[in-house]
Image 1 (cartoon, rainbow, N blue to C red):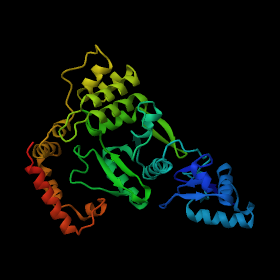
Image 2: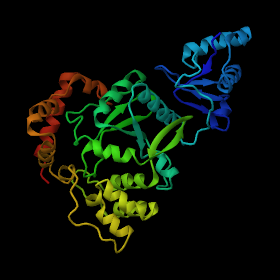
Image 3: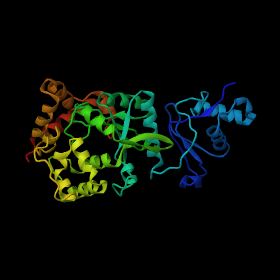
Image 4: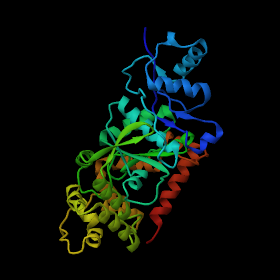
Length: 370
């Protein structure tokens, strides 16, 4: 006789959560596309039994068997005791938003199903590592091997996320692919690279992947950068130029404080990750007297990010993607594909009107004088 076990793509014990006041005891993400399920009463008690041990259906009472059959159809129980999504312990939420915590667990399981290695970056982990005070982020950031970004994005489509596609998708210009998931109240950024690293994209990912640690999100173990490597990424995020604006004293100070908090070992990791050029000023602030290389290689994206003029920024960006790809990218910039319309929040006009508005917007940008 087969035994049934509890399974999920993310589960949280709500006993000490505000939702307990509404009677909810557990929230569980199923193992196939669907929304999280809230369990309470007899359902919660029965699912906890399957968490504690594998159970033969014949050992259940008729009422329990009926509930268990329903749970199996909901994707919360499975027959295999070796199921990769089996749950043997349900953790309490540690993040401010339980839904965001479930998203981390869900992405990890979808990535595992598709043989994709993933590292979760930024967000509340930085607060847990005492690298920042803010304990919440509006989206979830993950980093995968460059060739896996689109594959992970497509794997998440059945779960309700749609890529906000760009003409620069898959290039160092667009370092991450944003996925919109309105039903989850959370966007996902799938990174294929990280701004400010003077390394080839695959090499950058592998070096960060080698500097990770385990962390639990919604009862699922995931990989996040260790504290020192994460400090480097956080500092890089603070100092990257935005629309030609270089970081001011405030952002340089934040980056320096983050590097200082990680300790002197961070200097070696900055060099290992090719981040000296981008972080030389924060390094000098964090570690006075440090000999920072003046000839460090410049990150490939710094040229276009530093341009105030959209026209000059586009010119520098095309250097990264190669002029052979320019006609295709220019065409898609001016005349976006239909899926871009469907994935863009707030777009309610017809496709033709959207394309015309897009073209007009680009003309206005190129006509701006800085």
